[in-house]
View: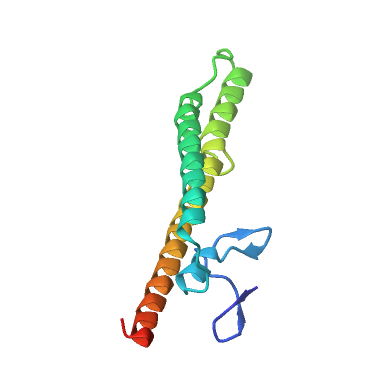
Length: 138
């Protein structure tokens, strides 16, 4: 179950992803300002996420070449197998392309959340700096 801000248990919204039935609420937590990340660590994490997204993009590009009928033979069994293999590459909700596309979206969302967490850290640091200057009279 998902806990709303007022403390009530509610079903998670449709757009909130789940992993093993648990709501993945990183984006919500970061956007609320409860999570911040120092820029040096955040940039390392962002770099790793970008590298992984590039790798997934490469896999997706190559997978597009697999989504074609296999040359098994022109008979009912061969035609059916060719269609099955083509759907496994792309077109089926459990196909490689569908799974990798969903994975790519999660990577992008995580990247965006890390970027927002860095911004949270910077905003808090800036606010603290301003307050300190006020207290010291500088």
